[in-house]
Length: 483
Image 1 (tube, rainbow, N blue to C red):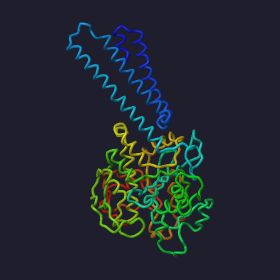
Image 2 (image 1 turned 90 degrees about the vertical axis):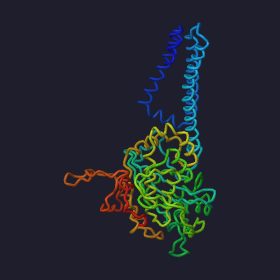
Image 3 (image 1 turned 120 degrees about the horizontal axis):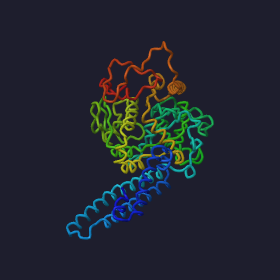
Image 4 (image 1 turned 30 degrees about the horizontal axis):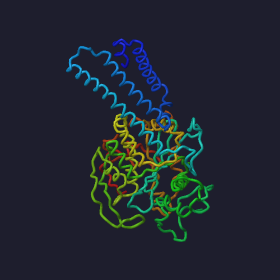
């Protein structure tokens, strides 16, 4: 304990003062950590407070080293031999090193967090959005029983022309329990609708497509083209915004599913690979061969026909690095879109399950650095504490998949039945009522977890039902990925 050496060395008052301060800081830290979690969360996402925290960490580390050196000088016998003095100095140096290293790491980690928050999350006054809701910052979820987040996977890169959002999902989160429903939208949907009060509804009254081309597949009017094409064709149509492409997809996805989309999180796929590597990889079940690369040579964004360079082979509990995790989520050569969407949901599920306190403590600087390149969002800094609280609920809550019934509602992308999909979504996220006594309970059957093998005789998921992702992502070698 800092101060004991000063007391033993005769500097009783100074030692008692230092000891009191050290003990007081420990008690305050324990009290704040145990009872003031909101204050801690606010500190973690406030660039100004993080800067103050960094300075405090450095000052405390320097003062502690001074106490160690001062205590050594007071306690060191005058008659010590040269060897004794050298050994004492080396021991003191070791103690100072033991203080300096964690102090430096802590300061660097806090600054990495500050850099991450400042780079990804802008304050509401410094950013512009055409679709972001106005909320009470002290209690953002007071009037929001479900928070709807749009998750975009963008394929932007040095070798790509434009940006296509090959991955479009909506995460609908119960703000009380954290229970989350993941809804995947197919990249080749046409006629994406817009809300009637949106300026884009006047431009595309019958949805996002070109009637002059006829009832045929129109790749330049697929869902995955909206992010890039609409802002180019109608710049400024939504007013002031920092990311019109994301606002366009928010409006269209919300209208298609019958939801009000609150915020978006755009994931750069190259950054996704980095963050998987930063956390040490993810563990997934691979039910069938998943291609690495490959191109049909047809459609928008193609770079010529070519075969996959390899495959991720089937097997349970496979640990994937960033490169292979990215292809596990993206690979589609020879496979169906629904199978790809399921793998993407399972990748998110595995990512949530892989992040633990030990990983965050030991690899946070790498995670923060990768996250700067990974994320783009319209979530304002002011409500980040509430998002962290909600994220903690989500991690321990139920995450499920909503089946939109592809065979009936969108066998092709030309004319999806959005009204039918809206009914399925409404049913899946509706508050669950407790079953009456005569209703057979299904809770007695244990859900398969990652690593278990699903029985091939398992009944298919009812369209619109929310399927637990522990079940959906379990190992099932009977799957082919083509249906």
